Image (cartoon, rainbow over all chains, first blue to last red; front, side, top):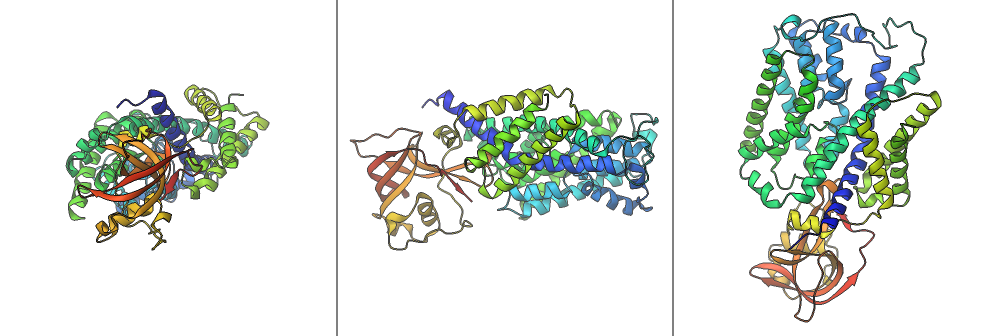
Length: 303
Length: 215
């Protein structure tokens, strides 16, 4: 029984367009918030709020994502900026791991995609926080020189928020729109790639292949972690992507995808290599993948 | 001018919404959100043009968006074909957490395909319904196991479109074409323990404006 290629292309295009339509508002939400923060809040102001204790700083790091609700694309430069200004490295690392998930936009987007399994949203956030805390704890004594790959050098700090030292007389609105459009371009690019892959999988991959991946919780979880790593899709749209596979792969594997993906993937690795030394990145990748696997497997057997 | 692709995709999205075609792609509750997002994008581009802001590079995105916009404008949106159903495999499971839409206790001919799937999947003794008259619409999909009458269920958008349906058995004198929508008049029969439709008459119908079921 031959499937006409024209019909397949048509379906592919329909699904691609569907994903793009669906994800577009979430992408724009993230971009707008990020642009507002970039333009109107300075990092010095942010650092004044840093708690003194290790635990306090870990909590601070975990929920910093609420201020920077974009995926790693926007967070890596922010983390770099913060570290250069004196933020302890482990706080920056925790921020990078948790911020892509622990923010209102991703939480809402995950819930929107998985309305029928709301516990997925809860566990996504919980597991992200746990893994972030463990990795942060491990790195709590690391110093800037030990982990950072870049030098602290004076650079332009461009914001107009309270405490900023900007004396230039250009319009905040103009800068806001510029940043917003730049980030939109970047995010929409990533979205289109991810959407195309998702649509292709939906249309081309026979059920047999997917079912063989989902033989048991163990292999499904590992496959999904690998998929998340390769796909490199932004966390505010990845829920819509994996939704297509949700009926074939079990919930634990979906959870693994949603927890591991925002932390580490090819795109993030590329960006992180400009901020941290190789041993740091390798440790983070190993730790997060193992922890994700262990925690989701545990949940799979308990529930 | 380099911002034109963003402007155009926003316009196309709004156009789809105005022509009531977004329903063919996403769960209807999200449509206001999507239109809002498109309007924000359009607004950003207009402000950029007025303020003479430029966004350099990002060639891949601009070209891809242009291509996508062109396709979106030139192709008529239609329901998913049978190709996706054949690849994904059709199931009969629609889940019991779905809100029962079984309103017609006596008139089985008024039940739709999904009403039947829910009933057959959740009733304690569905075999007692053997012989009930059925009048359902759906798309015929030819699978290795035979012909099936299918509808797609969508939870969020086309990415998760899930084909569900029942096998159909055509009398020797008739044939059906995979990928075509039919209004099927038939009788419920259990073959090998599984429910199926024994077709009395299959009427070729145009693909409906409301092809998907949203759960």
